[in-house]
Length: 42
Image (cartoon, rainbow, N blue to C red):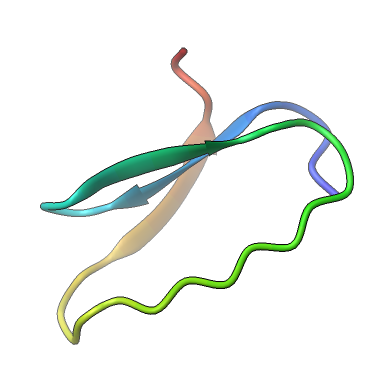
């Protein structure tokens, strides 16, 4: 469960914003692409 809006950032590709609440996210990225979780900027 996410307590506040959160961004999942895929380095070099972009990001998606996850809304607050019970959410399941599955992501597959190419080797070498970092995935970072941060507080939503929008």
